[in-house]
Amino acid sequence: MAPTNDGDRAEARRQHLLDAAAQCFRAHGFHGASMAEIARTAGMSPGHIYNLFENKEDLISAIVARDQANWLAKAEAMLRAPDVAQAMLDGVASGVQDCTDRAGAALRLEVAAEAGRNPKLATVVQAADAASRERCERLISAALAQRGVALDPAALRARAAALAALFDGLMVRSVRDPDMDKAMLGVEVQRLVRALIEA
Image (cartoon, rainbow, N blue to C red; front, side, top):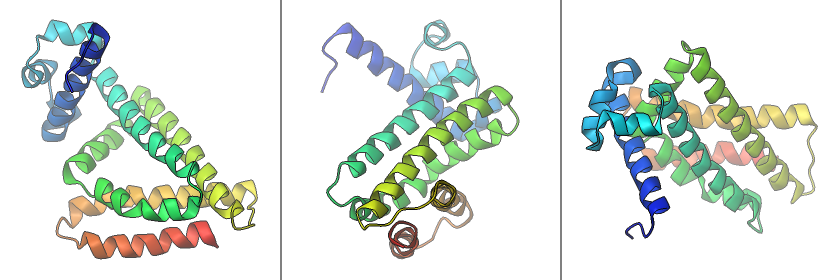
């Protein structure tokens, strides 16, 4: 559907620019991708980019925020489900596909690597991760509560961290083992998730 007003068109241009930046970061890394190249890929002038984003860090921050917003929307939908645990298990297959998508994994790993060197970007990534883990805690707590189980806060945090580590690890596996059987992997990941949310 085409944008219908100036606000929609501006947001569409912004998302197009983020897609172009993501493509360049995947192909050349954070430092190898120049703002000029991002502009060429987006079909925009460098000046137009600088009207929207101050620098590459701001672009990466916006990409992180966009990815997080997508995840939080999925989490909210699962929290509204009549059976939260089943909703989480039903979402495993798409989660595995998302985390093992080579292009997406390459970008997320590039962001993580840069966050290890760049304190400003580390703050952005860590804040996004904290919000995501909090949502994971809510999901696990709700899934267990529907089965009459409650965990102390420390155990809940540990389970949320384990769940995050499971899916984070899939990104690394997608690079190291691109020919993995994703269908079978999904079955085993679902088994592990079930242990975290139903015990």
